[in-house]
Image 1 (cartoon, rainbow, N blue to C red):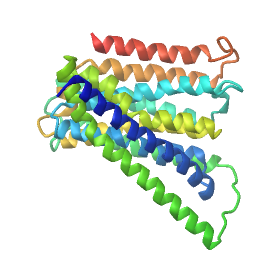
Image 2: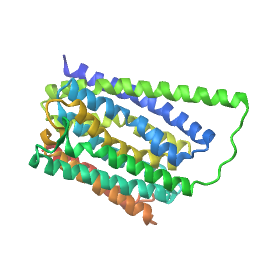
Image 3: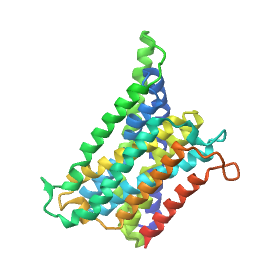
Image 4: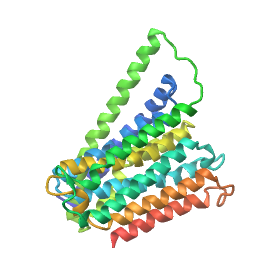
Length: 334
């Protein structure tokens, strides 16, 4: 197969995911408004989970069908890095003021929990090869505890949001309103199915790119597959700004990082040739701690929003976030 055709396949799949991502944002905003759950919670749980489904499907496909665990781990951690880079896009597009002024303490808590989870993954990547017999079933011990930490994080966030949720208008009880909401759920589900279906093909195309370009699979997973599977987050971010739903976009970005970490444990379940975090390239450690650095920068900006912007466009902290992204890409490519 020619290089041109391989890249065309990559582009088509990315476009399908991007279009579905646009509708995900649209219907998620309606659900948040109509149910009274609020944009923070919908973005953190529902939207971030759905927009992270390409990472889930492509990760399973990478380890089960393509047989390349580096693609799977690179995609997950690379998506985390790329998602955090979207904060720069948010700051750039939010012309009224720094986007960080629109954040809530719920966003700060999400970011802090994300740092804990990603740090755990980075530590597991370092020590897992030293304890090859630390396993639960055929899943490595390091990956096995990730879902537990995730569920505890979700519980903590739920309790926090429940205590701090603002009062909302009573929902309409009319039959037409219920019918409209049912249709919204249906359209949201249809968009999610397109995201899942397109995401399943990504690792197969990624393997073809590796063969055609002669690049290492860790680099392809961290950069190109991460870009493709993060297209929903990119589209959602742009759509949320246009909808003036900044809190929805921030919750989606930070929530996606949390969910992406859980995908690693799912990938390990489907990887039957070994224990995922033990066999992958050590270069993924760089990406894991790049995510920690970038999330730390976001937290600093959320807690102490910058008052000045470079050329009245973006804050210095946003520029530093992008700088870490490019530094990580350079180090992984070596």
